[in-house]
Each structure stands twice: as C-alpha cells, then as structure tokens.
Image 1 (cartoon, one colour):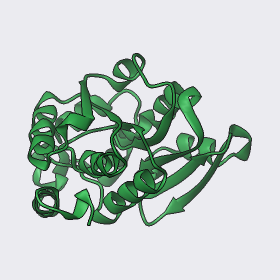
Image 2 (tube, rainbow, N blue to C red):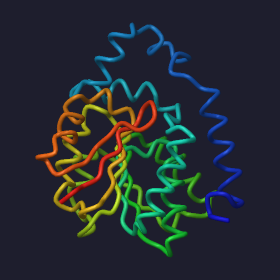
Image 3 (spheres, rainbow, N blue to C red):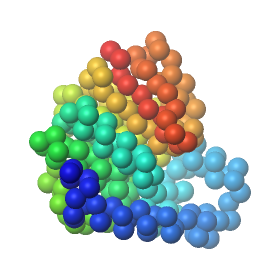
Length: 221
C-alpha cells in the first residue's frame, strides 16, 4: 500500500478526478465563443495568457489520471526530496507528488499559482489529503515566486501552468536541476519553443513524448 492508494488520499483523488471529468472549458461562455484557432493562439501567447486563464479559474485543469500516477512513480522511484511545480490549480498533481514525498520519507514541494481562488481550493485539498505539511504554495507570478528561496538541487520539475512560459520557467530553474532530474511538461505541444529546446541533445536533456499530452525529459548533465 502507498499513500496514493490509501484513505484519505485515494478517495479524495477519485472525487476530484470525477469532478474534473464533469467540467469543460466549453461550458464557460467567454471560452466557448472562441474559435479553436484563437484558443490555440491564447494558449501559446506570452502576453495574453493571464486573461485567458482568468476565465478558467473555476476549472480544475487537471492532469490525467495516468499522468498523476506517472508523477508519483517518477518521484517515488527517483527518491525525490525536492520538487517544484509550475501551475497548482486545484492541487490534483500536487497531491500525487506530495504522496510520493511522504512515501520517500519526507521532503519539500514548492508549487506556484497566480489565481487566488485556486490557491484556496488547493490548500483545502492538501489538508483533506493529509499532505499539506509537505507543500509550500506560492501565490503570484511564477517568474517572480520561483526566482527566490529555492533548494540547492531539484529532483523533479512539473510544468503545468501557462504553456507559453515553459521555456522561461525551465531556464529559471535549470541550474538547480540535478543530473538525472525529471521534467514533466503537460500539454507541451502548445510550446514549440520548449520542445525544441529539450529535444536538442546539446542543451543537456534526453526527451521524449509520453502518452498523448506529456513531454518527459531528463537532465543528462
């Protein structure tokens, strides 16, 4: 048995995933009115993303169930002690990572979210899951919140915030990624710049698509 498969976390995740499955951005008028081309443009924009994601503040924007298990396995198998997450949302991915830290004997998970209502929801879920003591949520722009007070070495990085900022967040943290550290980028197809960078061996990564919506990379130096 693991923290991930035991009460209270297992039942909490089941409920959160069911709620996520029942919601859709198309249910929000401001989003439903956008063409697929305009929605894709906003997802890729480095300037308009805040307004776009503000419309999605009531949606969990969760990783898939499979990606959640992958995150737990990578953190657990890699004996991660320090993890950084870009994009907390309601904390579903955060719960998986915190569960791995607990089963590894402890550690520190730093996660960041700019939407205050989502920070509140995430804190509630972390308390309900019994893992709040392992997680520090930093509220605000990740380019600022992740620029200070970081661990010397990072064992795992999850990118699941504004897709256009993936390159900037990676560069911000890159010097702290230990050799062998994993980087998981959800929906990385919306950031061609990021994919080009991590797929170029000269930049110090091994990288491959994983499943339908994840880019899995490893720091190789």
